[in-house]
Length: 172
Image (cartoon, one colour):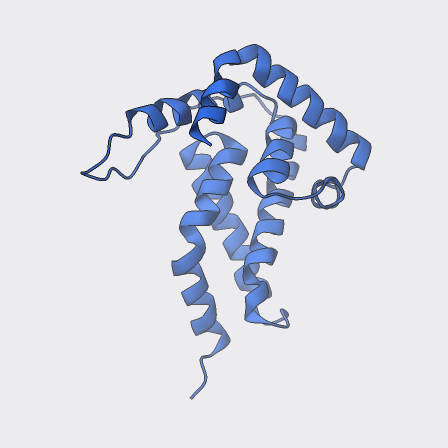
């Protein structure tokens, strides 16, 4: 008997939630806000699961919902709130992760100092490997806005964490 759409959705949630949380954390800079963002996006996907042509579209629909929710949150006028997120790193007993952890902490600290829009653009362009046109479509803005926000964000990152670029290049 083939899986029902609800079974397929449950499998998707179990398998892809960690990856969605990583993306959401990069967008929000806060673990709790990231969890809320993923939960809201998954709720939207659940409501629309019967309209999706193929269960393989669950991830694309959920990620698009995450970006739209994130954009709508930054557009709302509200008091800026900054809560430090907790970074967890899976440690392997046979390796030393102190250098990678320091790099992750420095990157997250630098990303937290960017505006929400700049952070979203960098996550889409470099973490999600989206084109400028795709990022513009997802964020409902022009390609020129994506280019200018990317340029401003990278310049700000270079000013905030000049050592970060050399550390990233060494890791690669």
